[in-house]
Length: 470
Image (cartoon, rainbow, N blue to C red; front, side, top):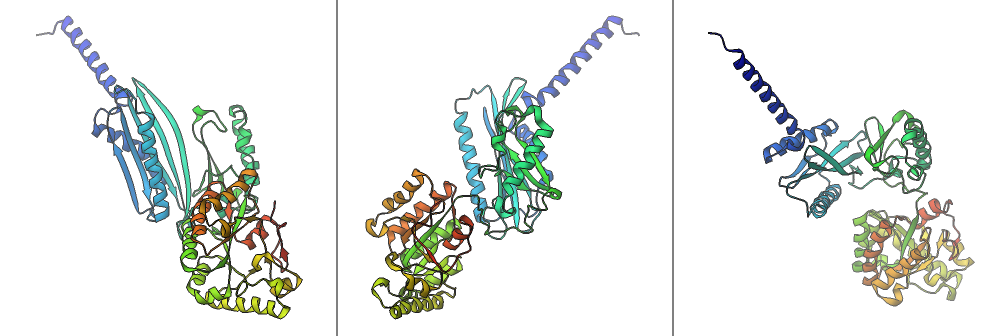
């Protein structure tokens, strides 16, 4: 029996409609209906994560995930656990802040919408001394068939695999690297994106210390990132440029230099007199060790003999050790022979206690003379910022003495005078050190300051009150 033509037409229409329905469902799965349940959300998330899998580094101990599904807000974070305390604490802070920020920004979102914040990462380790991590973050706002991507940003970090310390450009590149990359990247953008560059894009390509901070070291070279709306329009998203190793021969260090000092960045030397004294000196050292920073300590010989363990700790932490005489006498009131006894006896006591050569000298009260300078036979160091900690014995007052110089102009090139025998000074140090770092200063020893900020190899002469000003 033959099927009537009308029935065939009806079947054909049903087939077509069914096909359209299935196709529509398939399309919606990849648009607004990419996920309707927690299981679908995870599928969607892992498809996103898969884009970054090719850059994984086996040396990363554990890969962490934080996935929370809800309506309208969901998050999907994947981030590394390096196994190093400092980097992992830093990365966890970023993750927690990103989560809190997300739920705060979209607190009033309509439940009919779907919003997800993604966080994923790339990681590289072309050099055994360092690992590079770039964390990608973006928000997807689903509205009907439209998916709007907002708040794209990246975080780049380079860490020492030896110490866990965060590394900067100067640790990877030789001096003058900013000028080199300024010229290289300006030429690159002009030749490849001339018509797409924003007005003022040059501001992000100058040799300023504020530029070229977002980078990672990859298998192919050094990859620089530029946030949306800097060199190119926001809709272009994050812009990256990789400079190949073939173009880095004259600027990249053969090995990561953990102690490199950037002569183009502002620097300051913290100095402490009259120690060592166990409680306050060790508290100061705890702070410096926490932040991986250095200072110069002008020790009294009698105190060094009494507390050798504190001197040894300073030497082990890379502090510069200076001589402040044996018993803090006013050298103006002594004979040349007595001056020599104060200086030389102290030097022997300090070096015996710490096992490290004394490199600089500071006379008590700043009272020096030709006899003192000749007898010391090393750089004689005064100061350019007196915190008056000996007078105020108040941490806030000491901090404010430092801050007011910065507020008036800059602390660059300054030597700050404090005393390591006061608890109030130790407390002030805990305020001053992070504040200086947050304001872009490098903390260096006095000898490093003379060399890198003033371009002079330290000499056996007087560096007086008027020297340490930029």
